[in-house]
Structures are given as structure tokens and as C-alpha cells.
Length: 217
Image (cartoon, rainbow, N blue to C red; front, top):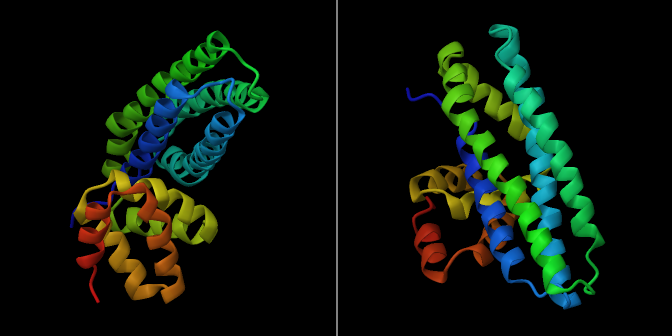
């Protein structure tokens, strides 16, 4: 069987929300409190998902990989520490925005985010080109699948919903049907409906209706 990629789905979701934040940060009027608050709301979701993803990687991917291939996690762990420092600085800058900043101050914040964004994209690319193949080479398909299930079971449902809000709009239809069919089959109806409700605003009407129509009854 094809082995399950541990990074693909979460990284697609993170790329999506990072890009969405970048677009909004570039067009925000930083002297308009309502627009700033909209940016901060999206930023809170983005920063939460970034932090949650970092801890999941450290605890549930890099730790078992390090046990099997000593030294293999060093680069990623060091990268995580470096990026977390930059992320915390960015979070403080975002929280300090209060609708009184001029265009120049807003642009400086935008550049600060762009600096983080570019470094983060480089980091997750390295993970998918280097770390992912190490996982695929050193763990069986069953081990990887079981590990993914353990990760899912550890995640609280509101966190899972927030993750899927950005993962599903960033994936292929086949990838999304696999997720939605699993929810439809194994989760309570209200959980399945909660997933649909959270993804609908992030998709066009055509994309959403086409996807949902193909979910197994």
C-alpha cells in the first residue's frame, strides 16, 4: 500500500492560512481599527495552528524518528527553536496594533511577517524533501498510519475543526473525500456537520457543493 505522508495535509493547510494572512496584511489599512481587528483574528488562528503543529512535530514525528535514526531530528528541532522566536516577536507586533498606525508602520509589520513567512516556507519544504523521506524509509506503512491515528485521537475536536478549516480548501478533491468519508462513516452526525460548516466559508459555492455531493451516503 502507499505509505501515508505525515506532513502533506498539515503543511497544505499552513501554507493556505499563511498566504491568506499575507494577502490580508498587505491590504489592511492599519489606521482602521476594524480592519486591524480582522487581521488580528486571522492572525490568532494562524499563530495557534503554527504552535500546535510545532509541538505535534516535535513530540509525535521527530521524537520517534530520532529513536530510530539518531541525529535525524537535529536540524528540524533547531529550526523550530529559531522560527518560534521569530514567531513570538511577530505575535507581539500583531498584538500591539491598535488602529493608530500609519501606512509606514503597517508596511513594516507586513515586511516583518513576510520575513517570517519566507523562512517558514523554506523550513516546511525542507521537511517534506528530507524528513518525510526519512519517515517513509524507516517506518512501515502500518506504523505511519497508526501514528497518524494516535495524533488525531490526541487532538481536541475544536482544534481539529480549525485545522480542517484550512486543510480542506488547500487539498485535492480525492484527499478531501477521504477525510469527509471517514467523518461521515465514523463520527457522530453533528461532528460531520461541524466540519462542513467550518469549511464552507473558505470555499466557493461550486467547490463546496461539488465536494459534498461526492461524499458517500
